[in-house]
Image (cartoon, rainbow, N blue to C red; front, side, top):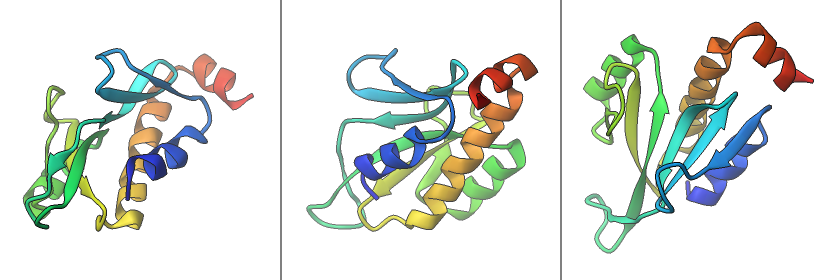
Amino acid sequence: MNRDEIKEFVIVKPGVIEDFPFGDDVSVFKVGDKMFLLMSLENIENPEKEGGICFRITLKAKPEDVDFYTDNFDFITRGYYTNKRHWVTITVGEESDREFLMKLMGESYDLVFNSLTKKKKEEISR
């Protein structure tokens, strides 16, 4: 999965905007002014594939899911520069499991959307 595919997946969700509050090298996707996905725009070397590149995304998750994901997947760590109890950072490469990433991105969006006030949810749902 690449950055364009990630953006295409999340930007169509209700109320989503893309912002760059941390500079030009991190794309932040928000719903109701709250972040649910941070995407690094810098490439890093893929340790699994010689000459391959990858990048990182950071997503919101339930604390019990954070524990499960970080215990069971080498490419998922506790969130960089975020609350490590509620965020995970995922190293994404071309060979990453698209369905799994879409599931995690959808869950992140849902967690943040559901935390919004009733008024904010109604504004977004119009």
